[in-house]
Amino acid sequence: MKVPLLDLKQQLNYLREDILKAVTRVIDSTTYIQGPEVSFLEHEIAAYCGVENGVGVSSGTDALLVSLMALGIGPGDQVLTTPYSFFATMGVVLRLGAIPVFVDIDPVSFNIDPVAMEEVLSRDHDRKIKAILPVHLYGQCADMEAIMKSAHQYELPVIEDAAQAIGAEYPMNRDTGDGMKVQWKKAGSMGLAGCFSFFPSKNLGGIGDGGMVVTHDGAFADKIRILLNHGASPKYYHGQVGGNFRLDPIQAAVLRIKMTYLGQWHRARRENADRYNRMFTETDLVQNNFLALPQAVYLKKQLEGNMSGAGENFHIYNQYVLRVNRRDALLDWLRSQDIGCEVYYPVALHQQKCLGASFPVQSFHQAEKAASETIALPIYPELTAEMQEYVVDKIVEFYRQ
Ligand SMILES: *Cc1c(COP(=O)(O)O)cnc(C)c1O
Image (cartoon, rainbow, N blue to C red; front, side, top):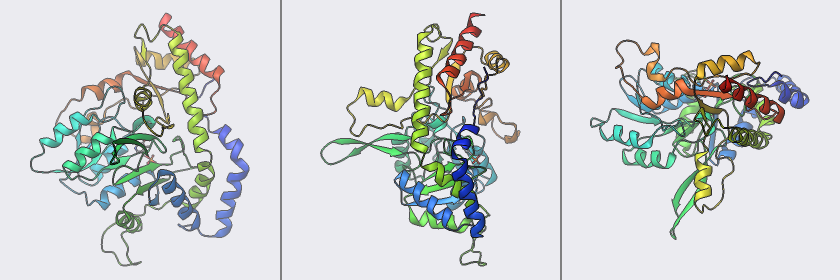
């Protein structure tokens, strides 16, 4: 049996007619830059996230870049972030001449550890840190309540890298006057701004690059709209230097179709994750510490406490990631058995060569450990129970060798 890491063909076959119609509609309109498809998608995604503003941009990377530009981040400024993410999270900081300040991750969620973060902020006496850039890795939100609390205390803006987490929900405690109530908040809606990627492998993926910034703050959204058109306001008058970071209307038209299936796809991924968890638990691999299952930390909270308004998308499983023994050997074995798998990510950000010799040598134990122990298995919505069984059987076979 062949089990690819991701199979976009099935989704395409199902949506082919609608997608071709939408693309044709854009082509026939001859509106090839911005236009109604982009603004409709902006409204639809903003509404989905429960925020007032959405601004379409050219990629998830550019969503992050333009957000930091709108904050005025520049040479010498520091941005606090995680050492365990896709490169773009750190890349945008470096491109602006700013310096990433890393805080190690929590070993269970793989997201920034808020206690370690608070400690770094408390030592920043000359206030070099200008923003906090948490990542909601694999489709599960970072601990935003703690992060927002520190952000308020140190008066720092938070830009959420929600590239892997569109629709993921976080149980935010809110004082309602008569006691604390939990409100499930969508990824990207808790900080000053949230950044999404429509890279084809994300839960909401286009037929090319695309991204979006969502924000409650209308003035911040306006700044981004100006920056993504070379900083022009009005046209041909440049008060600042921006770039061309616009979302392609063909992508917007296709994404609007896919948006209507997003809830269904999230559910299918979650069911696949539950099925893997059951299948692995029925083996002795977890018990014998050959592997550790991914933890949906907010589901656990929900089950333990008496939360109001139960969340559903506490984890959207953009990736299903295990910690395993002999990771690299397992990776080779699974690939030799026609099973697609990948490591997100094999090198922690603070260890990337591009940082150069002048960057201080630092160690972030949990990030480094995650980089050497994690493996992502196929989790896409159309994956079948038979395929999952095959994957689990092959992993069992590997540890029996
Ligand atoms: C995918 C991704 C990005 C970048 O998105 P692109 O659309 O590929 O530019 C940024 N951060 C994280 C965590 C991502 O997974």
